Length: 257
Image (cartoon, rainbow, N blue to C red; front, side, top):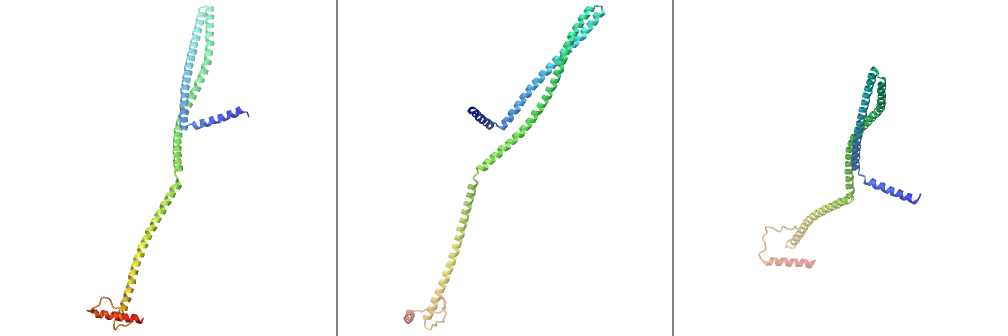
């Protein structure tokens, strides 16, 4: 294959590709219908011209028939008058119009057949145009639906689904974290309350033990004697001697330990 053949093929391929890309189905359908309507107009004009020619030939044929009949009568009249020469001339004129009539009859038959064919073609073209218009509307509806579907698919492809799902996952993690912090705060509040109550219980035990120790150190106290409540009906000492005596007794017990 020569260089010029290869260049020609490449150019043709690129041109065909450009034409294919430039073709808009909707516009092409409209243009096809327009062209068919133009053909219909031309065909109607052709049919009209053919019918006019047929009518003209038919008139000429009828005129020739009238001339044939006229010269036939003239020949009969001349012969009846005894003028054979005039009768011969009349028959010659009749023969001329007879030849013309035969030619016109052949042309008229041909034109009649042509007009019938053109009329059938006209009816077929009108039917095709009506069908094309219906099909055009259907195809336009399909094109519109296809474009809408293509746009929808483009929107779906344009959506960053993975990013959106990642955002949902991040939000879910934040919600879980917040719920965990709330639960931890609730547990800490519960632990503080428990520790406070435990501290109260511990201080109560120390106070009880301190009261028991005080009771043991008092005169007449025994180790098994239970500590009395702080609120008692016994009268409180009214002087410092009793307190001093308790302190001395406590010192002695501490020295013996």
